[in-house]
Length: 478
Image (cartoon, rainbow, N blue to C red; front, side):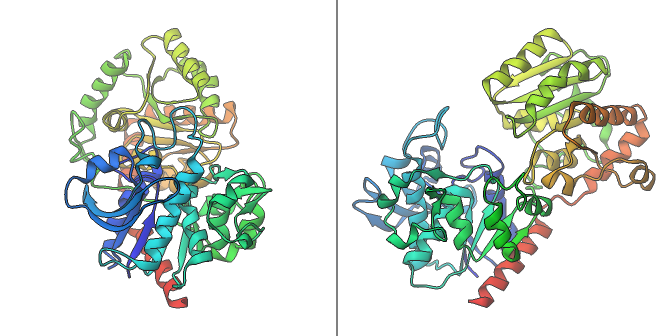
């Protein structure tokens, strides 16, 4: 079975978040199931630079959403790709979606990506004809709308929601420019609260809907987490599946990680000390043996970073040191930098993102804080498990599905892998941190929690099997 994946980013070529990690890892995971996957991505500058030679023109268009374009087939970073080469849409400096604010024409850019996906679904290319199309998030969702209203081939589709908060909502004035029939501007089409909803269109038309953890699949059916789409998701509940993400365990392997000063494994946890010393040096932390808690995150409300900033002084008062890597809301960045200035030697902050630093923090810190208000799956806690950096997480979404709370029963049974807290309040958050610090004062207990987390299967093996079964079921229904 040939699978066409459509996505706006893919690791290691272009990445802004966990979406790229998933779309980059899934093709390799599905290969074990005899399901070749090719991924259609936009021709950003970074993508075009990564292609090198060997690119092949699949289709070309003298006019495609405002300028000439072509669909290319190519290989890069071990991935089989289709690339929408449309310089007027994607040949821009900066981030994929805009620098600071979204590009005004993002609707046009990702409608074009969807149309290209539908063209490949219909006609194939480079010897590849899809048996199923898998679209990721709102940027790829219009693939399903264009297939639904224009394609003659009957090809099943999967719409994956990585974060329901990002929906691709645009004014109704863009509809005449999308090239869809008038019938599509309806409640069972692309219309959404009087405008055009890209993600809504994908959810409405997909053969099946997946999201990235079982708990999140249930949460988004409620008004609290449904972001205005809970009615639609409840109507499609029979087609909604929660499949937890995995991670690339070759990239994230503390025993072979070349980004670390000292690789280590479950039986050589003492080697983490050298990584810890490097964290202390890089973040200007006192070298006094106190536990180091880390945050590796977008600094946003969704990630609970306002709560973290609120309790940071109290975390320091508990005796912990803190190392932060992240960027986002400027007010939150300022609050964290101010805390670092107040608590020199106890709090270190690096604004931005660095893949090597993120690996170092997981390998050198004692615990990672993930106080998200909602979290479809989360990957940083999975990296934490893999690296013996014990997760302290809010009890929501994929965090609830992937971390076994260190309550008395779990500690006695030796199955605990981290600490959960609820509700999302300062007191509950601090209580979880205090529980973790009490366990940290007992080295044998802490090492057991670390090793149990490092044993957890956070690979794509089980998740890829679930995707393969879903694909098979959808294909058999055609």
